[in-house]
Length: 229
Image 1 (cartoon, rainbow, N blue to C red):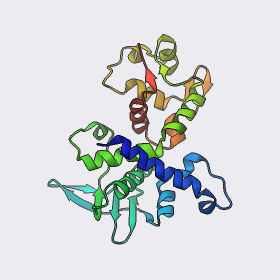
Image 2 (cartoon, rainbow, N blue to C red; image 1 turned 180 degrees about the vertical axis):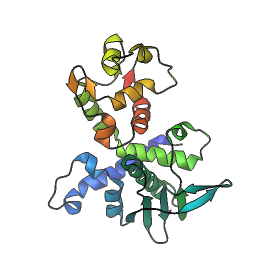
Image 3 (cartoon, helix red, strand yellow; image 1 turned 120 degrees about the horizontal axis):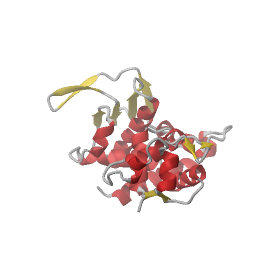
């Protein structure tokens, strides 16, 4: 997977949205995070974005799955099922946008819902992992995430996990973060979900970016925003 290329494609789309913000929102000033909704990118690209109560089921390796998202180049359409949680809908839509931009030879493509564990499944097809990475880069861009992270935790990245920060992230059992397995996401999940830090109420990073806790945790790990001794 060429991560640099995918990052650049996501950045190009973000830049195009920003440069056309006055056309897309002539009488509004949405936040940067709200600008980065896949449906707005589709509007800019001339793709018909739709949400449906159900997209039906499809077969995959001998099993049948509920469709979470579909791209159809013949009708120039991206469709997403809205029967899932809002953060999954948003990520699925960005995932389909990733397929649209990165995989031009895919004419018709169905995606099933992705549970949290499947983000770690290296056996998933390369095209699926590439679309996931595009979605992460698009929904949680480095500069914006860095700014929001530092505003939220009142510190520069990376956040160092020591006895003090571990206590504020998990007052009931800080040792679970101090001695967490480095291959797991325990520390990143705690940071992504955190709603209270150093006696301050905060909005979790996952909620700020309108993504799942797992998606945010993976992004924090990719960007090395969290360090420990």
